[in-house]
Image (cartoon, rainbow, N blue to C red; front, side, top):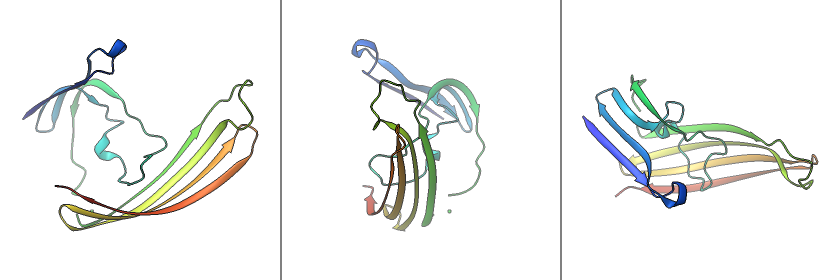
Length: 148
């Protein structure tokens, strides 16, 4: 059993804003927290500083019953993601305004010991401007995380 309350001062006029307030007992949860459509634990692992290009981060009041899907794939794991962000451009925007992006990632993570992750990640993206001009970019990142 646990209870959790979290707030910040990012509300209107820097007032206190309630972010999370819930109670949980085993698989039952009652209160306000991440929507079942935006569970941060279900986000793909990755090391890119900018994060995913399209992800839902939405909190809502709820009553929820959860069932585990399986045990976590332990020392070796991989994530893949693909996202599209489209913008409905206005006539007053310049021709080089962002219109559409596509971004994909794939990574491989190895945890030789429980507190250490070694990661190789490949990213690919394509940007299209309002005027139809486009370009692509690709990069490979190598990183590590050590949890104290």
